[in-house]
Length: 282
Image (tube, rainbow, N blue to C red):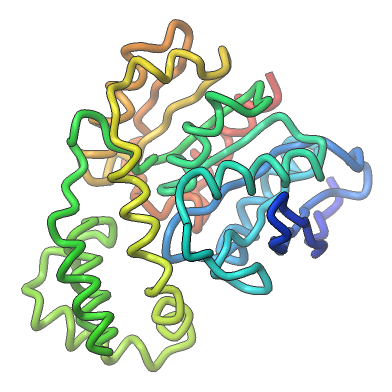
């Protein structure tokens, strides 16, 4: 199969913001439709390039991934930022691409799941969605994160974030002072510089997750074709939320992918790509 391209374009949202969009497609793929990928917090669309290209090749269909606000050439987060803004942005991307299929990871999973209740989405898949039911998502660390950011201590802010979310593997369990020192070293690398530049987007996104806390029952409106995936090596709270959601959906598919960590979509793990390809080609 021909290698996929990764073509940049832009989408204008209803409130006049601009979103940077990248489309992976093989030469034989149709121009419209396909799958839209909604990335997580503290990352950019570029980190999902390999996933988009491999999935496009597997599906022989375009896969679109856009920079959410505050990243790349996309507009900054507005002062009145909320999950509603993200849902509207996703709606604009779906309208632009002609797609009705969505994959969300981490906070992107939260956006996708909430958008699935109102937007015209027929296929919805998520991996490790960060979503709160009945207060199960603990964000007691958020004030410390914002305090460190406000004082200009970006390395400490990142350490608080990593310890709070527990998505970075064993390193996230290190004592705060040690993790802060390691972040100072890491911030000199190119990936570290990108991560540091994204730190200011974190507080609004975490607060949006907390503000959207609800019971699982309202999500009964989700599309019939809903795939809920979690990594076997991911923090437990992802599986707890996905299982709660699976319990109220009449025909969802829930699965744990053994040995995969939270960053599986960014690697991307073959088991995840294969599972998504099977789902979106059905």
